[in-house]
Length: 142
Image (cartoon, rainbow, N blue to C red; front, side, top):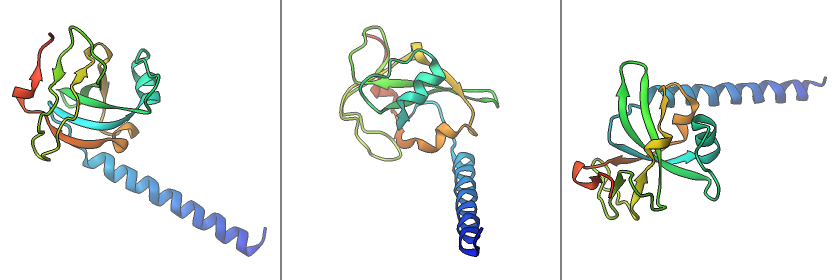
């Protein structure tokens, strides 16, 4: 193997290790709280985690943090803008606390696909924090 090839492999390894370190830092920095809303949960991962989530058209869905589970992790569930009777929902136009971001369309919280997750799970690094849902915006089933 030439010196150039060895250097290329060495640099590639450093880059991968650097990316892993950044991911670990991001995982450690996430603090979920009940009521938080995130964008960007990958449909394939949601399907894998829940074993039932109907990932068909979209590449990502938002997730909502239901509650903390002791010191073990959190219970989250995916959301959709497709109307689902008998599920809680977050009202269209809701202004999220912390960020001021606005929910563009009613988001139905799919509690039937709820799942548990730990902070260390790789899934967390892909989420985009949208904000905390005010209690007045979270509505019980219609």
